[in-house]
Image (tube, rainbow, N blue to C red; front, side):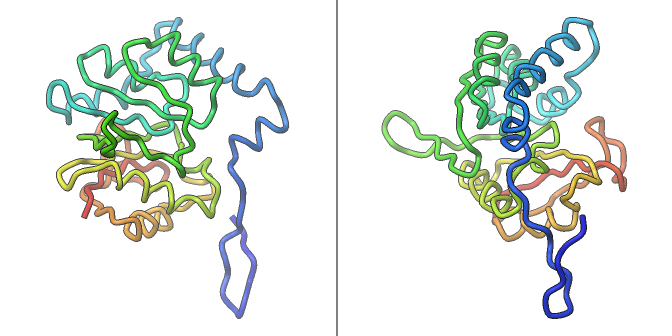
Length: 212
């Protein structure tokens, strides 16, 4: 993405949250998105590759955060396999769909940049695994990306892992993402090119982080 030039150096272009901007252009955007995924799942297509990887990484009954959960496709599959899943998304309509279609998990309408999940007695909830599938980071407003990653790190223990995947060419380079994650206190442990463990590639990223 092109940026401004200030003092001879190109500056990244600032942009807002792409999901909320899409909703402003088309109020039916969330419904259309949810209907599309329901049709895909009903057709029998395999849409659980991300979830299978997370399940393979997790101990049985793990605490898993589905960050930017959308309609609950990933977290719902994991909850059905006995994990304790909390899913968060800023879109209340998508959360309603997740609650209806995948009732085994806890779904909350929360902006990732403001996420502060607490136990009933007040302690912050920490997860064994955090998954962010579906290009979520590329929808986040440019000036909130690091904040989102900081909030994720806040909900991890030192032995927790954060797994994030998104495609290239979406206005957020992999190098920018790695720099933001490092600044948020996350250490890159493994870089892959697909959710089924193919080697690192230029067109897609699956990254596994731990918290420092």
